[in-house]
Image 1 (cartoon, rainbow, N blue to C red):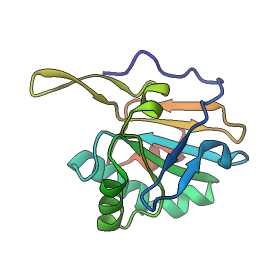
Image 2: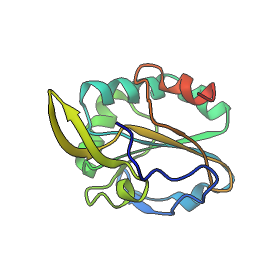
Image 3: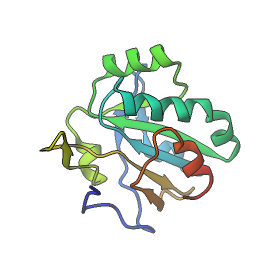
Length: 155
C-alpha cells in the first residue's frame, strides 16, 4: 500500500538534521553534490528490514562506486540503530527519527496491513536524490533481498 503523500519527482527534498547510530548529527544538505539513497524502513532487526539492510551492505561498494551515499531512516532510537548496525556490520548511517518528523515529511508514514489488521506505520520506500537535492526517483515496491540492484538498475 503506497502512501499518498510522496514527494513528486523533480521537487527539492526537504532538508533535515538527525542523529545516526554513532551519535553524530547528520544533515541532508551535507550531501549536496552527491547522489543520495534515502531509504525508509519500519523497524530495526526485523526480518524484512534486516534483509534490506544486509543487501545494501553487501552491495555498498557498488553503490559508492556509482556515486551514491546511503542513509537509512526509521523511528527507532539511536541505541536500537547502534545494536542493529553493529550486529550486521552496516557501514552506512541509520538515522533515528522517533518523532517521525522526517518520515512524515517524506510521506513514509501511512496505513499498513498485517495479518488482516490495519494500522499506521513507517512505509518501506526509498528516495533517490540527485546531486542538487532533488527527487530523482521513488521506489515504492522495494524488494528487500534485491534493493541495491533496484537502485543501481534504475528500477
